[in-house]
Length: 419
Image (cartoon, rainbow, N blue to C red; front, side):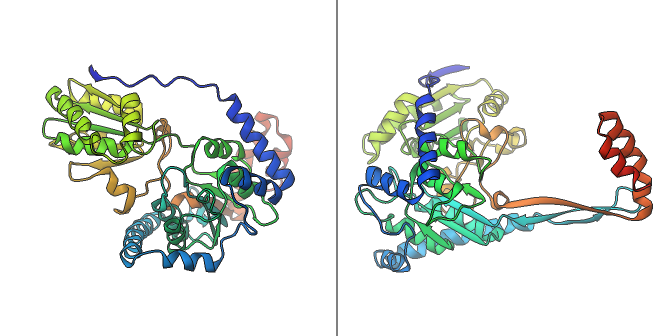
């Protein structure tokens, strides 16, 4: 393995101050409710709203700022996301009356959560696509109350109009103009204006991520996400200009985003670095992308695809591109990734917006144990069982012996009552 461009080491930051700051925000919201939200709105957003819930009039006004093409684009993207979510839902099925022994009947039901909050970030860019990615699968899952929330554009008191329209088109039942850690606290514990939910999903800054971590248990979450990541595996068949474009597409998200190229060909690796530098000369978002690439861009040349697979599975990237001549050689060996993009025709950016898979994905190696947001994020698989009298009598001695073995005598008696 030869490192052509090395990324800066990520230092283990002292997060004590972040934890304490977020903890104070959560406590304040729990104790003071809407007044705490108003105080934070004035402090962080530079604006006070009478009502945190967005009115129908505000939504209609946002539609008035959209072009017909923009609305059509949102509808087309939503259609693809919805179709795939329905296909995912169809792949899940109820188990009814499975019988491991005569007279024992086991099963499970698939039940949507009652309520969900879809948090749509609004920091550096208005990520209206995230509204489609979160709300659409929640509606397909059958969640009765789907709430959307986002921070306002600073000083206006209003959510970005494109985000607002996307929330409405995706089917949000309620929309709120609240962001930050205080929003996570409000939807976890409730305030006078905001009823709490069962699950909160969606990306956000470090304060949002920390609030989700601290509120987990009181409320369900998808996962705790960090800066965006892409890892590309490429051989001599790849186009360096295409690779450069895909790497920079992640770099422009955030100065802390990570773009990682694993190449089996040194000439390709060097050509890709040159292509990145060339694109940065004219890229409109170069101020962010340049910092990310300089600090966290990494290019490594490997001896074989087998080595690339090993490195990739250890890194567990959020987005994984396989841009090699024969991708099928390694696809089944890749096990740790948020979402996989196969072949040079398949830009990661397609998945970010409109192809149909979800772009809310695990980062910072969480892909080792979870996938991204999908229709199942909003579903519970709950088991059930029933027994005949004969089956109950037959299994009771086994359960009684096991219970006594653990010293749980009441359990043993409960089993013996069925003899």
